[in-house]
Length: 106
Length: 112
Image 1 (tube, rainbow over the protein chains, first blue to last red):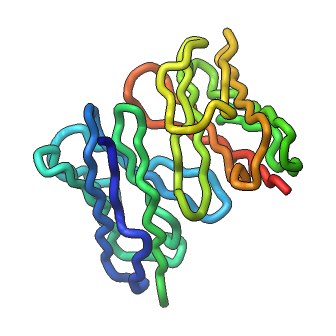
Image 2 (image 1 turned 120 degrees about the vertical axis):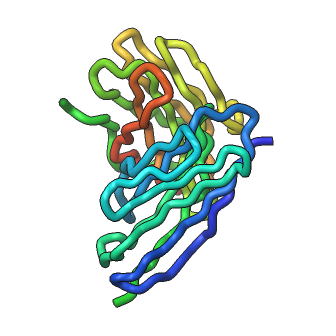
C-alpha cells in the first residue's frame, strides 16, 4: 500500500531546534517534498529531496534515506512565525502525510 | 507571473445540491491536481489532470469528478453534496516533470 506517516503535533521553544519526521511506503518513489502551511493559507514549498542526504536552506534542512523510507525536516533558531503545519509528500502520485502541527512557545 | 487562481474562495451549499469549482493554473503548467483538506483527514488527493486527461485518481466516490480544458484550466464537480463534503478544496499546478506543486488559496466549501 501507499502510506505516509508523520506526528500529529509537536511543541518547541522559540530559539530552539526541532526535527519533524516522516516515514513513507509507496509503490513508486521519485522524491519527497516538504511544505509549510499556515492556518487558513495554502501550502508553500520548503524543500525537495530526491537523493539520500541532507539539503540545507537557511534555517531549514531536509534529510532523506530512501533505503529506510524516512525523511526529516530540521528547523533551527525557531521563530514564532514558524508555528504552522508541516506536510511531507512523496512524489509519484503526490501522496501526502496528514501534516504535523508545530506549536512554538516563547 | 500570476499564481494559481481558484474561484470562488467561499461557497455555501445545501445537502443534495451540486457544485463546480474552478482552478486556473500558472501559465505554462499542464498538470493540475485537486485535494480535499479537512482538520481530521489532512490533505487527501482527489485527482490529477495533464493535457486534458485524468492521469491519477484518489480514493473518492464517483460523486467527485473533474475535467481539464485545452488551456489547462480545470474544474471539479461534486454532485449530491453531503455534510461531510465540507472542506477546503485546493488545487495545485506543476510544470512537466516531478517538480514542486504550486497551490492556490483554495475554495472553502460549507455544506449545510
